[in-house]
Image 1 (spheres, rainbow, N blue to C red):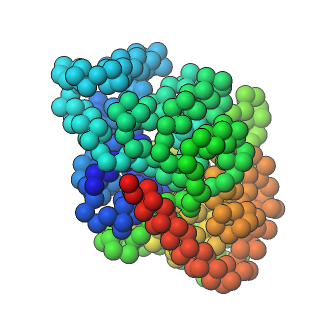
Image 2 (spheres, rainbow, N blue to C red):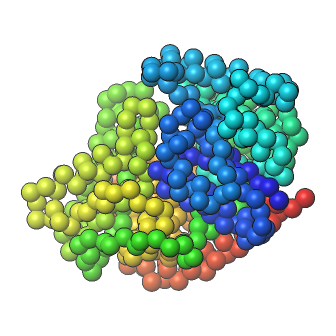
Image 3 (tube, rainbow, N blue to C red):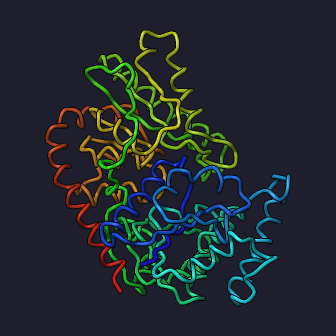
Length: 440
């Protein structure tokens, strides 16, 4: 069986890399001899295609460039207008791909792109891997162009009558009348939609409308099946371990959906202050805060990065008695190293959702600071039947954060035992879903 995973993103997003690897692990558990191919979100001309897939490429037979990738700079120019020129070129090539296979040839396409197209049209099943990327947060041109590139594999699958499914995703929200129309018209041709949580179905009418027309099931996030037991890697040596060790991931959140600069700045400050208050509480109690680099790629075109934000938090404690109790691991770590490190924590506070999933699947109590859509609440609710350990980044309160962490720590024995059972159930659900996905 030939399986093609689409929408494969950078190794530098450790959660996304774990989703991809876990999906290959599930495929091989169902079909040991499967021929697995991956299609990047980056085009062949994009430098990121060459440099940011070293890890995930080890888990497939062949990794291919996107046939319609994210807009990149045109020649040596990086302005938005030049990116639009790049997008127009991609549109023209996309039209050729959709028009006729006889037009898919040199000089319009490189050898790599021709091979990628051949793999696409000869795959037995195409899987849009897990995550949350079929969404628009606003009606900007930038969001619309990105959305179109994400929808293109589904359109191409329809053109060539390929079996395509969505596996373990949160869908929506979709902002804009045109965007909603595209969402419905293109995705209604999916053979099967496996949502990773129910809340997106209940919260967004566009998702409910889609799932009324296609086969739809609710399954856990595929990263719960991310297995590190049979993979060799160098375990991270934790620094300044104490009797109490709390893991932390942060997001340099731009709050770009807020139009008022003053309000946006206030939200960023509030989030920062909540984290600082938590760290002060833990370090004064004799604990160590371990801040991990879950995502090391820029969060937006404006250059927001989790690494710079983490260093800002650490520097806040310079000159205090607790400076050595706030540790940032300023190194490119693999998902395997991160999950192993998280398993050694007493509790975990993650703004990055998949750092929380790594922790929960290692039976470590975890709190999530939610910043996008329904995915956090939905995933927690499905796993534990409650979302009490999910806090909204827009309204996070230092006292509330500390109170929830204290509750997780005081009940960590019972929480860990329950997680051990719940994770086993989640993993079995994912395995059964993959059996359904690969069946004829």
